[in-house]
Length: 449
Image (cartoon, rainbow, N blue to C red; front, side):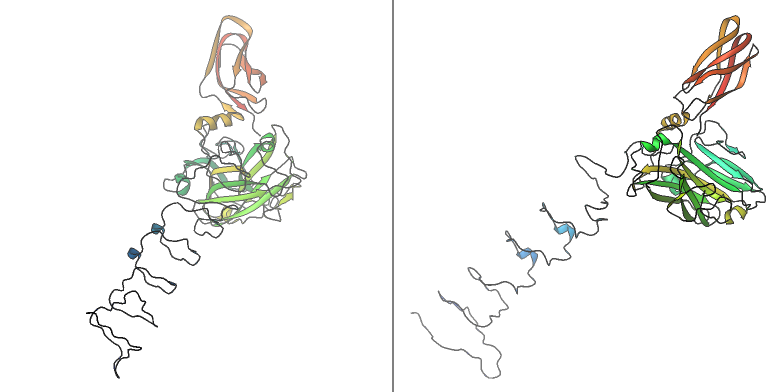
């Protein structure tokens, strides 16, 4: 027999905070309605309806099935390990921690970037982007390891200038020490100045190195040099024994007013430092499409008052005879046995300094031989008859910049002498003079800028 109790209200007795049922309450087909339902046990129902806005602390393990589409606008601190699957297309303008914003700067990644094509709108070519030859100071055809002379002496394509300082300046090719930053970048040699004796900072004195690039190379390299929003970037490693600011200058002899661009860089003592300078174009820049000098890079350890008349750093100025450099302290020159070393020189189109372009020694040698060639062993020839005028054609390994000056050394002949005639950029004729039949010799052919 089924019993039934019908009440309008169940209230706890005075002093009692709750009503306790020791067994289940079965509602049949009716609903349990009220203000709050509190339970320390389990509430089981066929379904739950209503807003879940105030549900909190739901264990992730108890949420199963497919979640409906929701807004993630207020999600924060979501661990990366908990994000799986394919992400939909999203706006990345507010992304942080990727190195830069997409679309207007760089994307930095330690992984792999894959694309159907890489198109540069500002940088130069990927290969042969370094306009400098022998920027790692490795090629030395002359075989001179050190010298106190000036001009092209040791490193191919680099020339030494030092004057009126009263001391002795020795130029050499030094070894880059292992473990240093330029060594880890692949550089093994450096161009070095070492001073000895008592120096004087005379107004006409100087100690610097220079490199020249052909005008046609600059004209065709891809730099929109008349635009102020187009750039070249210069970089090099440098180390000096004395802590101070030093200077460098690019010069353009073909430009209207022979424009020069100077800048400063600070060095700590005996510390390799990479210098990077981005240089804009200028409406008065010009590069003739010929094999003459187009752009010079000067790197100064010291320059006297007669030549330090660039008055504005980081801008193109007109050269009229004494604007070689910004003013520079004489601290290095007057210090005890100062040294100055440079390696890893690169000039490229664009406003980003890319990693140094290491070309093979064979390729670098061929680039240098356009300007200077020295045989590395005797050449010889013999005729079977005596004659008063023999000629033997000699071809250079590469076409030189212009018809070089050719001189012979280590010469041995059985006639009265030998010399170079009919010299062209491709070679010359060795003329054996006198009544002889054989000659052996070596040559030096120079077509430097």
